[in-house]
Length: 293
Image (cartoon, rainbow, N blue to C red):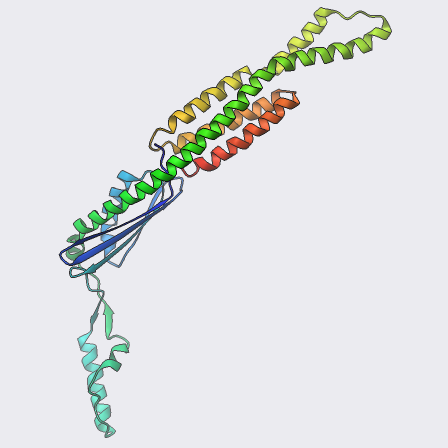
């Protein structure tokens, strides 16, 4: 079934005292765009993360948040012992020179610049965590797919309902077409009779038939109605595919084009009103299709 491009999934995987948490968020986008939010060093895994995502997600802007904690997690910071020793020597020299007692703790020194420094993890430490990251990512994608499928099912039901409403309007237009020609025949006959009768000129049926034929040819919308039927049938059939978003978007454009052609070719007010209803529902199709993968 059609999948929504919007969703969120989260999963946690643990092993040997180390825990990996992965969150995947996806919003609609014309193409697939993947971004990774993680600590420095974990971007070494970005290509592997994207390769797995591309097997599960085909369109959308996807943001992956990665967090690792526990025994095997790379240390975020370390003490610069050389800098700390330098601060201590200066501290002791200052205290002895001013006859002050030397403090018994170094808590105050830990806030000084250069004591705690960021430590970049090694490639080996990051790559050793990949199996854990991969397991958490797979679980997050499973959760994401569940949410996207549920939303996709809801949108597919709405799309089928809207297609049914458009089909009903198309049938109403098809039923109305013969009456339009007959009504125009009667109006034309009456107008010509009022013009010719005072002059004593008889109305030639052949001339009237020719004018009616010209009108019928100019306002013939049979081809457009057939194409609308075909597009609607294909639209509903595509809703059973996994990723029909691009094709559905193209079909909504074609539906709108056929509706515009019918509106411009038919002089009938009732058909014009039906065309407005059709175009309103096509716009709803377009809005929903923008969120389908």
